[in-house]
Image 1 (tube, rainbow over the protein chains, first blue to last red):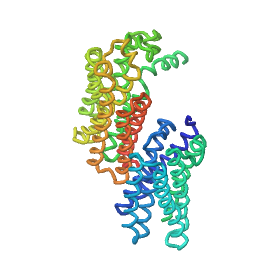
Image 2: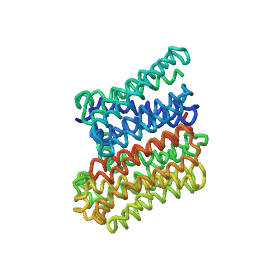
Image 3: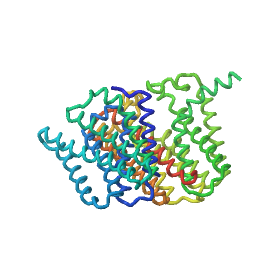
Image 4: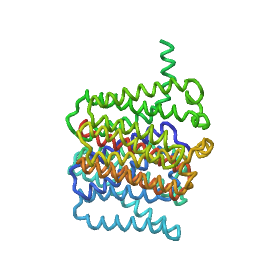
Length: 201
Length: 287
């Protein structure tokens, strides 16, 4: 399926917003959140550029599962590190071993049910953290209400990651054409929501 | 008025506007990378003199290579190769524009003028007249010539040749093979028909792909080192790091996945990477 001009425009906007976030939007944070957000938005940026240049065929790469796992893991780690100090070590452990588990189950001859289970667990937990944590923080008044947009972005990131990952392991949630048709818009919405929400910290 | 417009229409393809524009942008970025107070008149002079000297050398290059252009599908419709312009007219145009460009550059600063002249000399005399038809390694000199505008811009700002200038020039030098070698693979038959020695025809496609990948890595190392020495702010360094990771990913992909599509992807990404790096190098002055 070829990318259209509208797809490329949406992807370019996503790339520019992600570039802004990496260069400017996360200044002033401590080292680990800056690293985590840089990785998360960096993967989004590079993925957007590669889709513009090479088209949707780039999504046939086996690296897509890894990339679509890195985004929610790194963004959720940044949030937990910033706002839930007591969970830092535990969540860092989950992120590192979750990532390792995804890489191993994708690289070694492992039964598909294990691949699915690991992916669902890693995406599920990280997606829920990005979705719920900003909402809870905004509801409790620890941050400005607009920060809830990060939760919306997080929800969309989780959705995008799940769609791509399960497509790659041969259990698509939606037909391939439908996923590719909505992906550029989904990427733009989630990036914009996440970046806009961050401005309300 | 119509004949003038018609002439300009014929002259325009002689300067390879995209390539000239990109090289010109590297020159301006080299100047702005010094992060001194920007003098708009100097920037205009820099842009004007570089535009003329780069265009002049490109026209002379096209004048000398018109017989090769006529043999290649990709270039046989160029105004000189197709006979729309005469050799004498194109040669005169190239000489006049080159002299104007280098003269303007020397009038601005002797050292700057010398670097601009070196770029023209390496492109026309060493690359085009001497080596292009003899060895595939001619592209090294083409690359050195292409690296001169960014060095010239830096020299104009600093008044001397410094390490950062050399690193910036190295970045452009190593970026250029991603362009020239990709084209030499894509238009392999064309170059063979014209009898121009290229990396793919001399060493094979595998070696050429490896050279492109290594060049891309070296270009990113040079631009990264220059950015650190310039004192680029942390956010821009992060962004450059992210863009570099994409470049490295594609560079390694070209070695594993041997397809023209991925090769061309690396070429496009590397061009975008270089343009982004130029903007990041300059932006501290602009914001």
